[in-house]
Image 1 (tube, rainbow, N blue to C red):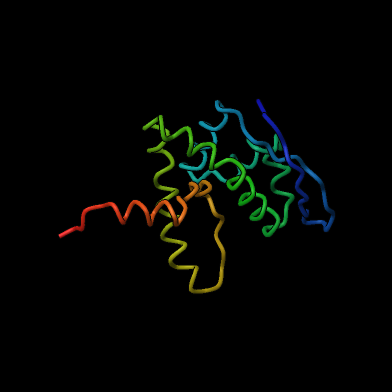
Image 2: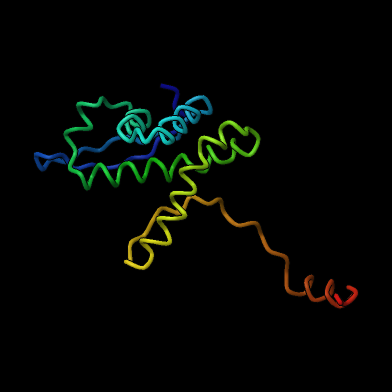
Length: 143
């Protein structure tokens, strides 16, 4: 497994114990595997890829802990996969169903007070109001 950096994360096991693990910021090659597993809805495979843990270990987690772990892995790695997808249409095609599902889910669960992970990149800096005002004062009116 090729890892660039890791962040600590604590999981809870079915027996009530807690374990600190490392979540990976995946390498470019592994981001392609990440996208394949995301597209195939292979959640346990996605968790194994980003943690280096076995399927048997994953089965020892509480459902809540597994869900939080899965969400954190997506939040950690999806923005990088999305950045690569801007230049790779095949990767973009793998990610598109997930993006569409997240948009639909956001509309559905938003009314129930649930929160989905924010997978969008940081917004671009906006221009200052002074710049916008000076441009609009010199622009021809739209008719």
